[in-house]
Length: 266
Image (cartoon, rainbow, N blue to C red; front, side, top):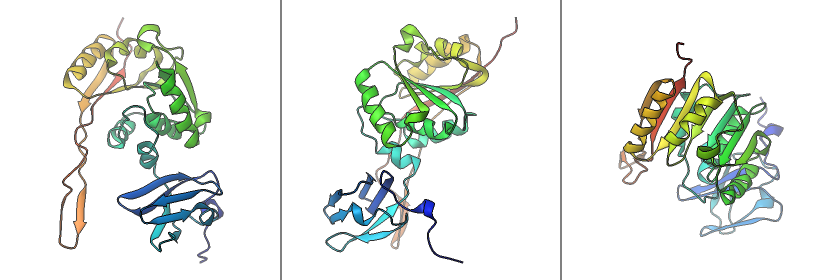
């Protein structure tokens, strides 16, 4: 069996590569000829990486090894240029499994923010699906567009600068609505008009009071299987001297609400 890397596993100009030195030194870099990356462990020449396979080990000018890895969707989400807080992968992963979206789906997100959720949704609905991303503030949209383009997802996203609470959605008959705004209950009536019956509306909220009000409005607009959860993720330090939880971690981020729309009895 040949150990020659497959052509599809070679790093090309324009690719996103996670350059990993250690747990504290990880850089998500878009490959471009002539680019140099600097760190306190030395400089890295990007030209020496292009054309190598993912998994390639190089050395900085100080002789420290670095590793060229395929970035995960989580890596891409966490390393977008931020103008707002983002949805954390630990929360998004659960909700995506709890909905039915996949390739070809049409989905709405409310609250584009920095575009991290937009990227995740766009990658899931590709090749034939589309994400309609609604945001009130144009400056957020412009930043999100750059992040989405960098991730290679632009063809699957349509941005709408719009106050949904006031004006509703221009897109209808979608497979899911993802709500990430401070007052999700104000969006629920419009989401009920936009989402297919039997399909999903989900939202994130940092406070319990927001959850309660959102659930009350979901019930009023013919949603069932309403649930609220919180995801706790704790990393373990595995070392020769012993294994234990890491002292610092991301604990509470948001409460997650999920519901499905029904057609009520006449």
